Every structure is written in C-alpha cells, then in structure tokens.
Length: 60
Figure 1 (cartoon, one colour):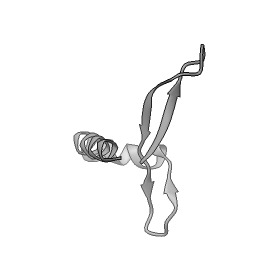
Figure 2: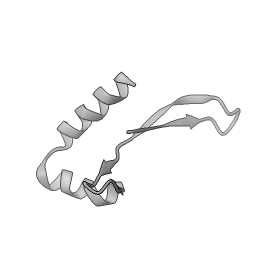
Figure 3: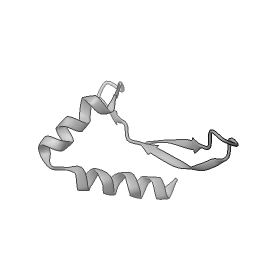
Figure 4: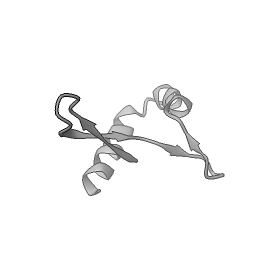
C-alpha cells in the first residue's frame, strides 16, 4: 500500500489521503494496477481487496 496526499490546488492544503494498492511478484517486482486488477475482477475478489486495503490503511 502507498498513501498519497490529496492536495487542494487552490491553497495547497491536504484534503485527504488516497491509498494505492500495489501487488508484488515473487521476484520482488511491483505490478501496476493494470497488471493485477483485471485478475481481481475475473476472480470476483473486489470485496476482499477492498477489505484488505481498508484494514491496512487504518493500521498505518
């Protein structure tokens, strides 16, 4: 997971945090979302991914 600030273009304030899901290969490379989200969709695992992202984001 990576947290990225969501900034106001008007005054530069931090408005929130966007959590970015990343998937790592066994070799340690990072798969971009285009590489793993289609598989999540095909497997019907959106609810599981959403839950995992939320739990990890709240622990950070």
